Length: 227
Length: 79
Image (tube, rainbow over all chains, first blue to last red; front, top):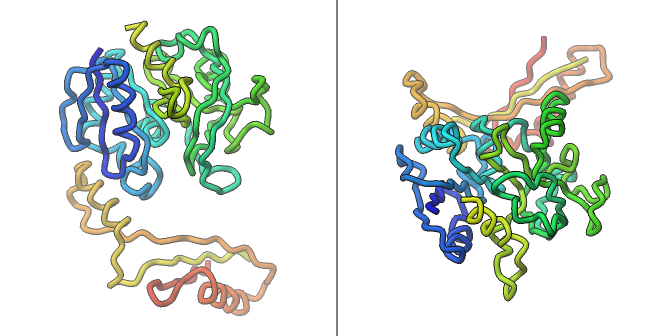
């Protein structure tokens, strides 16, 4: 499996993702945002960080980078795209995923571990969570409060396009366990064809039992399995 | 009464955010864009029917809180 990690000015989780990709023997290239051609890849990853210092809106300026045109082509061909944190914000600004990510409800930057329920197990990213669909991953963001109009939310729910929801350690999805105020406790969503996943939590940070845990590993292993 | 105030960086103060926005627009093909300065816009609802008095309050608000007059200018928009 070949992957490309796109690096924007201000990305800061790009190398963390590479550590994860290396561990699972996914052949990766780093691609600078200014390139206009995407190397042959099965998976494109937009990493976390603060591209362009979050100027104007988080992810907005990055979404106009030269590389994005090729990423949209890759998406239309059914290629896999994973946007993590700022990467999710960029996917939203490009229009590849619907809705918007607002400031966290309590206006605080959040950096902590949260429980998530994997609510769609039928996509290539989450296939491996079948036996363990309540997981713990870290979040670290200021704009993660997912918001969309009722029509979009209904479409997401009806077509099972929500991949992750914030929940309690027992899997209860409620306001108490919603860290940032996001609509329907949404932590990550898929596009209609389920080849694009945008998520606020960081799976790449939980890939080693010695350092943290392995709840993130399942995603990378699952991607390899479904490849 | 509703009054709005616009706060913008003074002409000689560097505005990196405005510069990035303007460069991005140029990259997107908007060749006629020369420069962009980014500021803030406030809509202020006042419990005051006298225009003059209201303007005075907003002016005070702008000076005391909304703008840092060392680097920013404010304009009050009455309509």
